[in-house]
Length: 79
Image 1 (cartoon, rainbow, N blue to C red):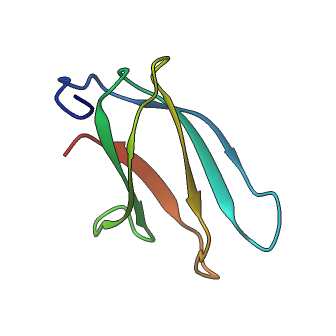
Image 2 (image 1 turned 120 degrees about the horizontal axis):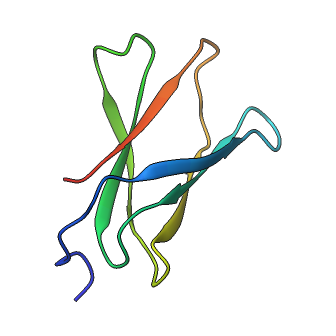
Image 3 (image 1 turned 60 degrees about the horizontal axis):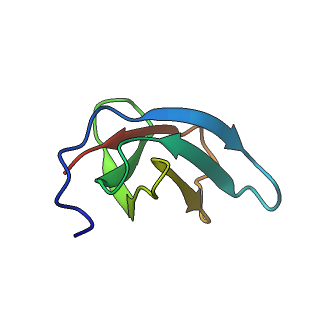
């Protein structure tokens, strides 16, 4: 079952901004594990905006379609 795998720490492989201020994160984690993606403007308060299950290779992609006009930081955590 997806999400029943104990996740290891994930790492961001890339962060791209293709168009219209969107941000696309490519992440490597544990195959079949659930990860939550969060953003922050101050590295203190974090807001979750996506959850993904890593594929058979441990990869997943998360897209922030409405980034704020200010700088944003991202992190990936296991729930």
